[in-house]
Length: 627
Image 1 (tube, rainbow, N blue to C red):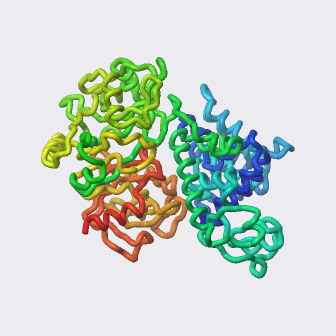
Image 2: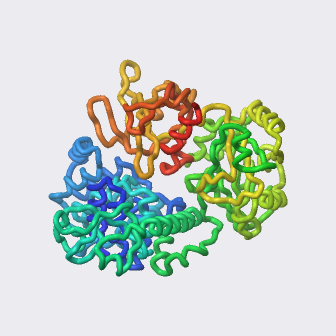
Image 3: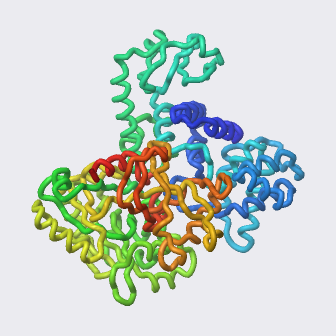
């Protein structure tokens, strides 16, 4: 399949902010996609070249891509930099400068999707002397043989900044509409060709005008499709409930399949070849991370017990970062909750796993805690967060910032998948393989109780020891990847912190003129982001004291997509944990809410993906809870 066809789809997606339209266009494209290309197309639609869990990266930043564009175009980097500043988008700068190429095209053949992804994957494997120059040359080779439209999206793909607004839920629904043909998203039926259409001026199939030539509008926009209904040129109201139930069932099944495999390309391939039967029996595989189970926030101990039942399993809630540990014989894999492979960064954890966990085929869920090498006390998360991204001097970092793992759940033991087994059974099997070794590998301390008084005492002790709070878990609850389903509740002593993404900022004044400040925050609302206020407190002038202005400025500058005076908009990527005194209603921000006295506590970008930031629904719930 020609890459230009995918580039045209990108352009179409970029022009609409309507989620259903994106779903329609993606699903229509996927239907026509050859089986041999389907996986690669799905990866590229996510702005990736591998599944989400794969650790390989292209490893080229904006400055190096700028050199690739210069090499492909024959233009000086200074000219390209000016275009970059003008557009705020290196992809658009590439499109502009490559309109009149000075270099001769290397290929007469059109670029295929296979060629593009093959070269990009080859870049990830390039090592040794001259690696950077060879990577720059390979990207330049792609750009030289591309059309203007293609070059724009090649650059964006290499940078991981596709800007088409495709969220995981959008792609999931597109797969449902493409390969599970009993349901389809529509607004109108064309009377000329009987094709389902979105609300457009012309039929997407035959170009007949829809202003005067359409059937009855349909709501909701999900319906059951059958020949009988198409012949009647409208959707019968009686089908709406059935359609919604069918759609919800399919969403649940496909989402579960993704939570299990974290590979949307694999799911697309299975759906196309075998339908729902293809994904129903997806199983765990050591070395491929799954979405970890997430927990709800309880108002208090009584609220938690009413949700999970009595007696419950009570555990301490730690201020560390979540780690999923996999082992198959001598091979150990370590993954963060963002599915990043951090095995190389934690050789000490690998050593502990081999020595103190007595199983050669398992997946366990745990928390990694930093330890002060002198006092042996637990350190707050921000002290050890730098270990996640560390590439060099790892041995030295292990000495300076040692860690321990506290194991609290089992997903697989001795090759047996435990997802559908109750928590108390999972814990019994977990205890059988853990050899407790203080400050290295420890099994989580448990209290089994239904007494509020006893749990309160355990809670106060956890806070006294410097932990965040406690977890209260349903003893018979199964392990549900990626879901907050009420099998466990967390209790913390303050208003629930929000994990929000920075979408804008302002350049400071005076001694802070060189730094970005007054950061605009946003929460998630389905596939959109809604602003919820600004924050400037909790951020330090010196990096050793916590999250600093300099650190945030360094992270955000490459993400600037628009400038207006001192105000900038940035690509939503940097996530911060924010504490606050109160949530207030506010017409100023698109969420309808604002935070009173917000302050930044720590960065969460290294451990939390964008699709797991706090939602508007959560904000509304916390607003009601505080009343």
